[in-house]
Image 1 (tube, rainbow, N blue to C red):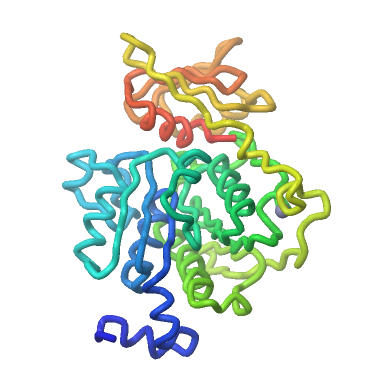
Image 2 (image 1 turned 30 degrees about the vertical axis):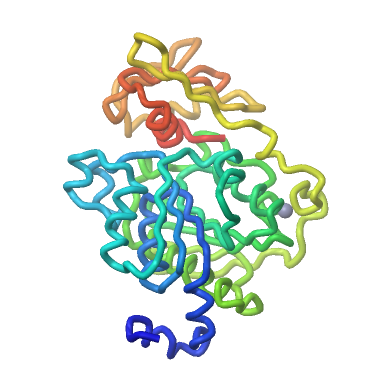
Length: 340
Ligand SMILES: [Zn+2]
């Protein structure tokens, strides 16, 4: 064993055996933004042997305040986040394999991975992808780690294949407008650091085979108030949870939201599958202070943000003008409209 990991090996829960286990581990991180860059940085330095980084978006200036692997040069070049992160981490640890995936995380993407990851980390900014990870990991028998942060608050949780899962706690994803986003409520970098500290520590336990020491419950924090706690959850899955009962995996049959470039219009249509109509009034209220040119008509909601003009319809369908790349459009849709 070289000296690179000497301080980590001395930690009682790791040891030589744990370090060797980390070196042969396969971990997928979905979403390489604030959460994902913090977690990827820590896991690469810890010596996780194979890291797969999945993100569909590109670096921009507003990312640099908290997305720790990116530079001004990445923002100027609009480098895909997965690629920029992989380049940075290759300079940190060339003894491990880092594979960037510039892709939308869908069930098809996960199914097409050449090998199953041993662990999946949530670095996303939307609940549609989290429920997809929840259902796919349960079906695959893989643990995953939920994490989210907005404003000065954060939350994280280990989801084991036997449950309780995210659906046990919240049977349906929150609706657009119910939860703040980094665009509407802002985000303080230490909130990211706090939740990813929990997420990474629990990941290291799982990868070292220390399942019995995994923290059960939901870690929550408010770094401005200085409050940090683990809120207990039921030890068994909810009796009616379809995923934990293995009777249905709703996110795997719902179909991926489609994003289609509209020929000759410099526009993309994003049309997510949705069971309930979107409440445009509530969405308008949540966006009021964060976007420009907000107009509510009887039929739709219009606004401008990130240099793109949005028209959102009650069914959740949206037209994004001033963008042509479908992946970019889906990222902008999730950022401003939320994904349900
Ligand atoms: Zn469940």
